[in-house]
Length: 382
Image (cartoon, rainbow, N blue to C red; front, side):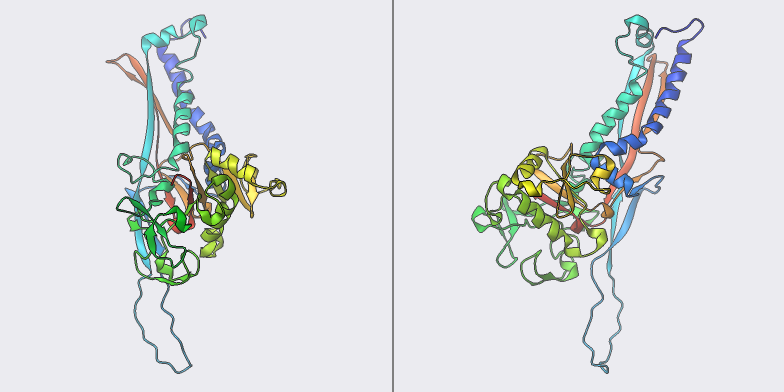
């Protein structure tokens, strides 16, 4: 649109400055509704704004007070018991920036302006941030090179590897052994560090009392911080192909994650990579694929590409890595944001030495997973 007589370049810049701030505020809720995990966190009230401090910490209870027998006259022994470990994560963030020179701004107007470069600069920055953050929920924030990125779910989904061999939980006796397709083991042996605490079985003590983990009975501290990591290609499910194993593998992971036996710890949704999701749909019989209209869950947020298995939403999401899927317990997640909104727009600022107007969009936040034991991963990568 051509500038009116008497309208200066600086007036146009002030107009753009007002627009970028207004746009980011108006689009905040649309951002959350666009992605399933964002939507679930927002609707559950698990997004905390205006967070302070250099980071955030919380306590995880890893054991119970010892219990002993009593015949009514049995002497009691009193001692102090530490039941918690301290966990801590830093805030991390992302930023996107752009600039337009004064000359380009003057050129980009009137009939010659095929694209409104300056006027749409704010929306392009936010769109870029949204597309990028959609993938960050799934990354390993502890991996080399990821020091400035969120602690996504992969931050605690590491597997124990010894001598180049991935370690499994023996389906026979629950001991650790090398991966072998012929063993038909189901669960990988977890081994990672999240918020300063090891995820390995028995890292703080305890033992498997009966059966093969995660089946049977274990001391609370034995697996208080250990996620479920399922081999989706295990012959235990009847095949070495995901198409055949899909329903059984997801059902196994969901119900094993319920070993915590509390409402807060329940799996709310399973998000698969697109190909795995299509195979899952094709693997179900017609009667299992009937979609039940629900007033809660992902469908309530407007996501119709969702089916239900044992009352749990199963779907796909942009950003899920190839060959894997994750089970999320939204009640055990929180997105902690340092500012009053997820994205903050800045600019335009005029750089006199470059004769350019600069724009930026940024966020400072991080994800908090209350305990890895409340989540699972299914992998078909091997």
